[in-house]
Image (cartoon, rainbow, N blue to C red):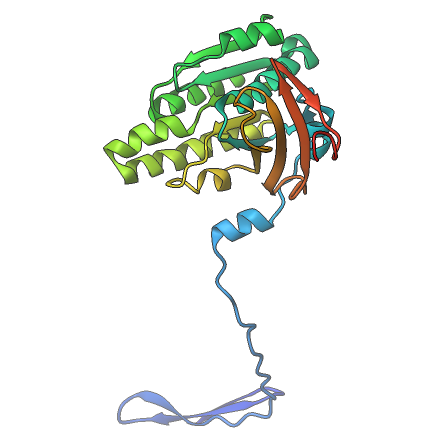
Length: 283
């Protein structure tokens, strides 16, 4: 018989000569056992983490030219983030984007680059000229479906690896190619949307400002959630017309800058965006 001892416990082992095997006969112990209960874990969706965990943003903001809009957006459209601008009016959201496009090219100097991805074949050339976007540094490309938009984004990403300066990418209008792809295959269209969102997010992570122009789409509520900032434009009153009238901009969600709930009033006169006070134009 062999005995192994330790200050805390001992184990006695007896030898069985017939089977040449050792079997423990007793395992007394003087040590104290502490039982700890693990905290109860609650499952959390990845989408919940995305909306509750702020992402760092130290790239600054792109002014739109409207003091009210820029104040609501904490300086303008954020660089280093994906912003989704939704509106029933195509011309109004396009006008806001064109003004930001011009500001980007002029504010950031010769190292600025800007891409306008046209998915509807209605590039606002007259608006570009009226606002003053005739300078260099901007590119306009045509895409017919989500795959085409992905190809453009891949081309932009490849060029950015060799270029220096700041980048602005505007997709006008991102919901149009989705509708075309949905008509062919609903699941494939949604898969392409996710792939596109990831590619755009990688551009934003390099410091680019990405602006998605979208129309409200009941069949695609995920578009705003794929963006870092979701901004909505609504017209005040009725009968004002699509091109002109008083408008309200509201930040519906923001995971990078704490702009949630911020809003601003402005009006459109021709190709100009004019600020409105809180009580202007209200009876």
